[in-house]
Length: 394
Ligand SMILES: [Zn+2]
Image 1 (cartoon, helix red, strand yellow):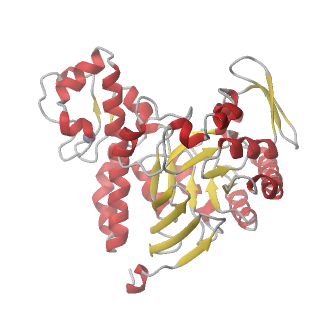
Image 2 (cartoon, helix red, strand yellow):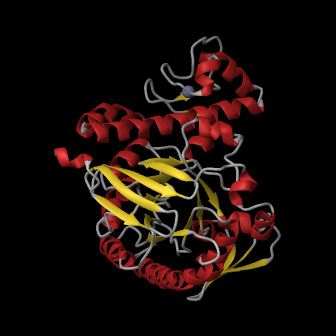
């Protein structure tokens, strides 16, 4: 790495209170960034725990913070259906509602609409579907989604996109891309009205499925629109894992180096490494918390463990030697095994704390390696870890 790599290489002033600068590494490769928001600074590459319903399941905000989280994700679709964005606004907005005073990103719900909702009717203006809660018809348009997000009032809002399954052919992927682009343009036009009331950074999304030509085109076209950041979406939605990993650089290739890059819904050690090498700055995924609830615990050393396994019954050691999480500092593996077998809530909480801490420790090490100019060594050291977790459990 060149000596000048420590100097800021890119800077982009976003709307009031927001900013992003690349402060180290290489502009399109492993890079260190600083994302400024009205609720504080985020050092990137960063992992955002998922709090779909306004809560990272089973954890208090202090516990989430204690794992090393800098920023969390919530879901506009779920919160608009229950309790409703007006209820969240009446309770003081999303930060007050959740009790989380640090940055928040809301996903638009495009992924949920296209993966969960039944009786979906899609047209170029928007999408209508039956609520999975009470069967009522819900209509979402890009404008409506931005208004919901503005009412929730996070720091960063994602545009509504058309997230097609990873298996679709070229024709369907092309249609999803065109719709996504049209909705992105409408979001840009509508944000003037919406964000004059509440400041909100807005990120565009690269679609295009598993098709290289479409992904590259999507990257070029979305980069022409004035978003505060750009996400690569529609990945890890049923396509082969190798294809997903290969498609990341197609999606990032035209993105401006001075804006944050977010890889949506992808989590895993090889995934992080490959994406960071494409200049990705932000990640989110339910894998650490969902797997913790399933008694599957990650480790940076020693391989994953299934904590219900009887081999742990009399183990006096921590879940992972050297882990500084609350669970590893205070409790034996045998005790946590007991909690899981008895289905005690504290077990799921401690497992989630540990798994989140492992993901944050990985990216903390990645940031340290980029800062020190030792990425290649980090990559070699992490190769056995990548092998242990292939294929990922999702
Ligand atoms: Zn731990």
